[in-house]
Image (cartoon, rainbow, N blue to C red; front, side, top):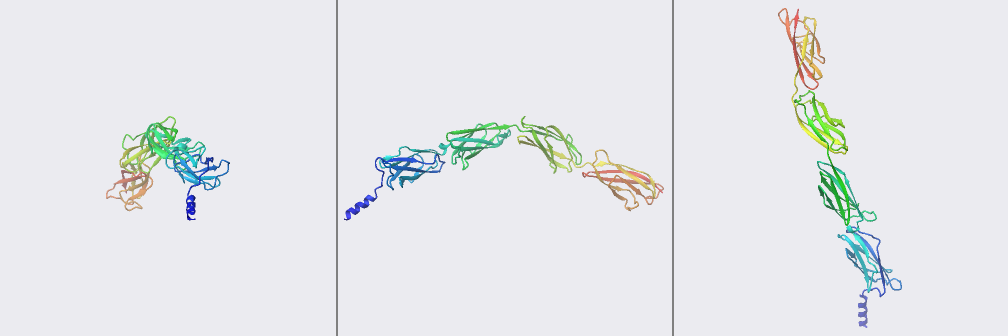
Length: 396
């Protein structure tokens, strides 16, 4: 009795295969795969009479690309399902199935990676760069024939001029692969994914030109100086939109949409060397900045003309200071009246106006007529200082 039992155990280990005349039909709901993607593949296994094969019938699956996981499936209700694992290589996976002497009537083909590409959409941001050199992002969107984005597809970028970084990228979950073009010339970028290509053109536009002509004489603190700026649009279709001046002394000035030759006055309040810069921006948002150093001399004192009436002791006299043309706005006067006056024993009087009235209470000298030296110091709003003097006579 032991020998039959041993034979029965050996028979249990033999795989159950489909009988002769079985029909195997493959199907999958996946039309294409990204790299490293996966898809279910099902084999329908029916005997010659159209009934499902016995449950547990072993079906072997093969593929020309990627791998089947598992390589064998067992039927339930006449169907066996496994998964195609795409891997990292692009191409078309040809899937077949076998059981016993029967094979699938038709293979299933699934494009993988680049082989699944139906189209490549390409755009550039921006489409214009300065002719002095600039960068543009080249964005490729990889789609299948149904317009669905594809991830994991290698994309190659080439250009007629300039450089691209990176030269190859892989599409992300949004189907996009991005490279950066750097160029100072017109360029056409070609993007390739699988057998599909797309192109985009980038134009190198001339930028505005700017020149700065400083004053013919070195400016001084507090004295207005004229600067000449020449602004020329770079492209006929891109007029100047804004011009901004930075005087490097804390003052910034907008000249609006200035163009051509412009004379702009400026007054520096400190001496030293200043880097005056002018920035012109055109309608394409291209900018040009030019800088010129300017030396500014310290403030030059100005001279006041002072007049004073003659007078007698205890009688008022009037003293007036007159600033020359081109002087700053004067914010204060300090008068030295040369002798004690009523209200100021030291003879020093300050005013905010260019006139002072003085009364000498006594003869400031021992003679019958006294000549008094009067001086005045004026302070301008810009920090400059002016001086002046005169004499007056006082009698008893």
